[in-house]
Image (cartoon, rainbow, N blue to C red; front, top):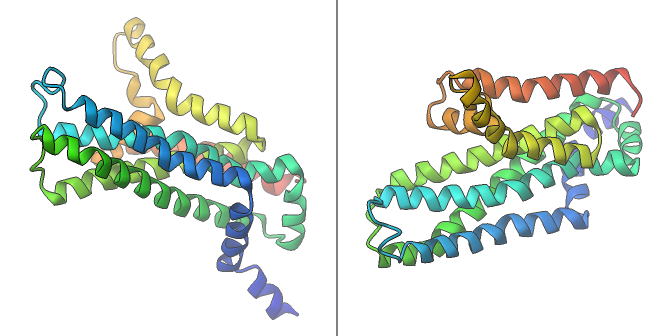
Length: 255
């Protein structure tokens, strides 16, 4: 009996169980499709814009590729974050989390499996959205003579955008772990990623120095460009605070 229990509670088994839950959730497929389709549409429009001589005046090939990739990631991140919230929030909303903890009492291991699933799904969706977005815009960039960027540079830019999407997905999951509610998780995560940068930019005017570096989106972008930058502690703090608070609540309270 003990050996059976150990197998059932292994991280790989829990990951498989979480993947089964996610792929049988209709809303998760809606988010997944949106995460891929919306960036393709955005890349198509941006590619068309690059065929306008006035729009591309002074724009280098690297700038054009970077703008296409970043816009694809920006459009994809919203759906990816919503999906990350659903991985945990849907169970709390429907009460199914109680059944999960009965079957797998090691709650932190369950959360680790969910977090791994979020990272894996975010990686796949981001790779599809950014890669297909680039492929969609490439003919227009070629027409505008905005090609010639080394393949290694393109891969590096794509990898940075994928990494960004994974970070925001994990942040959304951590926030949901802290609040244990789907609507609150989506609202707080999107607000922190999309709106806080704007708020801090306005405050810059009053305080006289740059506060935007404290925004999660800005810090995450800087870390992916330079992993040892001063933005690293900011990103770690944004991820750790909700994750630690959520974990403490998880082990001290009932589901």
